[in-house]
Structure formats: structure tokens, C-alpha cells
Image 1 (cartoon, rainbow, N blue to C red):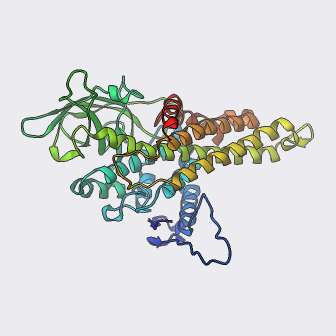
Image 2 (cartoon, rainbow, N blue to C red):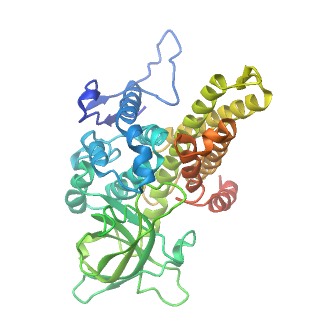
Image 3 (tube, helix red, strand yellow):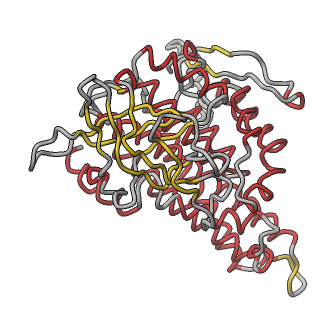
Length: 432
């Protein structure tokens, strides 16, 4: 196994068991007298420590605030910054830029454990740590990494990514936001982006940093769109908040916004990679995004299974606990099996991913699509089964199941719809 570096820094005194930066390399020896054991979900002691750390943090800090912040559609900025103190906001970012340099399995662990308590808060974490920080860490130059990643990793800045538009979602190459090259070498961006996670934190202004995809205006008629990627900072002239999108079905504690670019002047030094080559960066970063969305689905499913199993044991009907009735047994048992299958698919795929492979290739698209497709459906089915077992107690907002049920739906839409995954799997399978 490759060496992994995981930041186990912790800001809360109740998490005093967290140690300093841990570096560990696990090697197998050919002359071992007994076959080495291997845990797919926690392949090294470092991963085990990470899961325990995040689980403790989620129980102590994330769980108590989840109902209130989701009900009020508020982003918990102070809690978000605690993740920065722990080294989580740059989970996959190299240490030299303020991150923890961890692998994909570690990223999945963090997303799964946080989503167990609050999927909405976890969604904002994902948009910041993966869609911005990981993307820039893999595709930006040294100057860009030094300028933007330290604040992103510490939590001093809140970041996101702008891809979708009012009329371009799955049809990403149909985007209309244009990047026009100015005579002085800078760029002007014109257009709008929709459904942007972390687009605003306060409902009045934009977030701090965004990676923005835009079409090059140099494309000839009939030529495939050439997409470029830019870092756009809060306060850039022409860059404004269009609207905060409220009254969502789920993920209500994760702020969503429309962002507007009106002749927004972006310096040439903020162009990420080569002009017109961002299609490659986009596809590559989608792999870890989709896998960690699948990890969020696993967190939802795991919580749903635990809640319904406990309720079935405690709740009495017709003189016996619900666990004695076949209909309830089926809902609990099938949900458990689906959850275990989804987690196995998730972590098997994560174990094969290398964040620093050739950036011109998206090598894991088939199984990152497959894991997200399966786990997204699985989370919705498990939360629905939990609501069925709990009946009225699952249907009301005073319990966790109703919130998990609403949150799970986005995981069949965001980061790629189920239909997009089905299409891509069908296209990719014959090539394997």
C-alpha cells in the first residue's frame, strides 16, 4: 500500500485523543508466517484512527446542530472552520500547500462519517475540499496553489466550483458562459452559473473562491466547445450573487446560489492549466467527486439501518417487538445487505484510485459512475425503509429519518444524474 499522510489535528478539547500529523507506511512481507489481515474499509491503522476521530467529532459537534441549521437553512460557518483546524478541509491537498495529503479512501471515510450525522453540512464540505481544493491541487500551477490553497485548507476562505448553468446541467458542453481573451492577456467572463454549492455563505455576497468553467470564444462554428477553467475571487468586478436558492427539498443547511458574471475581468494568472483544455480536468475531478457522493450515500444508509433496527427492537405492537414481524425483518435485513454491498463497492473502488495519475486520463470513470449510481439508489431505499418501519415517528421532522429521506434524493441528481451514469456505464463497458 502507498504511504498516506493524514492530518489528525484537532481543535476541540473533547477530541484530545487526536494526535499530531501521522505518517505511516504499511508494507507486506513475503516471509510472513500467517496471512495478513486486510480491512477494506480501514486498510491501515491510520485510516482506523481517522474514522474514530471524525466519528467522535461528528457525534460531539455535527449531530447536535444538524436539525436546527437544516430547519433554518443556515450554513454553520464556525463548525466548518473547525474542520479546517482538524486538517480536513484540505484532506487530499499536499501538505506543502496546507493540506493533509491523504488518499481517496481517507476522503471517503470523512464524507461517510460526517454524512451519518448531517449530509447537508457534508455537501458543503465536499464542494469546498474536492470540487475546489482537490481540483486546484491537481490541475493548478504552483503560484495558484500557494495563493489559494492555504486559506482554503484552513477554513479562512469558503470555496466551491461553478459548472452547471440555468440551461446546462448534464449537457455540460452546452454551457453558455463565455471567456473572452482581452488584448492585454486577461479574460472577461460573461454568463451565469446555477445550483452552486457554497455560492453564498451569508445570503448577501458570494463565497470566497470559485473554480469556474467557461467556453472559449475562439471556437469556430461546428467545432467542439473548448472549455477553460479559472479561479474567480470574491470582490472581482462583475462577479456578483444572483440569488440564494431557498426552500430546497433537502440539503437545506448547504447554501446554494446562482452566480452572475457580467464582463467579469479575470487576470491571466488565474487561468488553470491550458486554455481550452479544462474538459480533461473536469472529467478527472468528477471521479473523486462521485465517489465521495457515494460515501455520503453510505453514511445516510448506515444511519437509516441503525435507526430502524433499534426502533424495531424497542417498539411493541400486538404484544411483541416489531422485530418479530416478517415485513419489518425484510425491510431491515434487505437494507442492511444493500448498505454493506454499497460500502464494499465504494471502498474497493477507492482503493484503486490514484489522485496523481496521468491527468490526461480519467481511469476510474466506470466504477465511480457505478458506485455513485448504486449507492445513491441504495441511500434513498434505506431511508425510505427506515421511514416505513418508524411510521409516523419517521415522517416528522423531530427525528433524523425524515431529514435523511429528503437529503438522499439529491444524491441521485447532483454530481451526475442516475441517467447520466447509466449512459456512461453503457458506453464505457465495451471498452474495458
